[in-house]
Length: 307
Image (cartoon, rainbow, N blue to C red; front, side):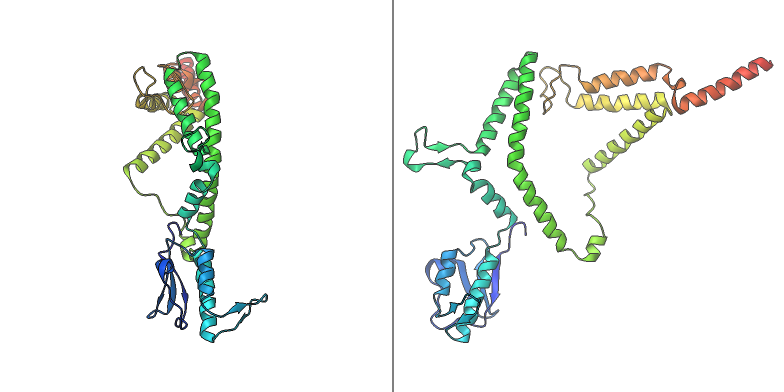
């Protein structure tokens, strides 16, 4: 399905007398007498012209009602086998569809006029090359952007580049959705009931899960105000690690994307805010910590009054 079949076949008991596959036809189609099949190379496919040449080898005609007339029963069987194998070979794999969508479209891949090659009109730049040129220009300008207005202008250019990317990628994603839909239809009820294939248990996968669970747990603790100081310090430590992975420091490669910061970015600001929460007695004001604090404070006050 993804890369296509190695061959396409149709059942045929024998070749009719006088039918031979010579020249270029012999490179595309052959008959296997042992398996009794007419076989087409899966990487070459039959063209309409080749199909017509094959059909003209037997004196058979197809009426408007689809009925075959003329020739012997073997001729008609051969005619039917050619049509079947042609229909099967006409189905492109998804890799071939993607290649045809990108390379076969002059608007995407561009076009070269051989007669005017070497002149300004000799080459028509396609959308793929336009996207690459725009991306290269963006990266060059980003490296030289030293003022705020230049960065703001680059943000607009980045949005336009993303639109160009979407126009190129969306047709491929549509093919991907189609492939997934067809692949799902091949599954048995037992396979469907088993659910999706679990991800590979790699170190990166485990780290990703640990990060997700840690952020979720710490976020919930901060929201409900339970263990506020511990959760705030732990959250600050995690965000500081995110900051140190690709810090916005001079000489360090910039983080991909439209965000442009110098030394201080949103992660560092959040680290400072979380440390402030840990340093201040915010846990005694709201949340579960506040309820616990007031409970013990009221008991302490009662004990002091009793004494």
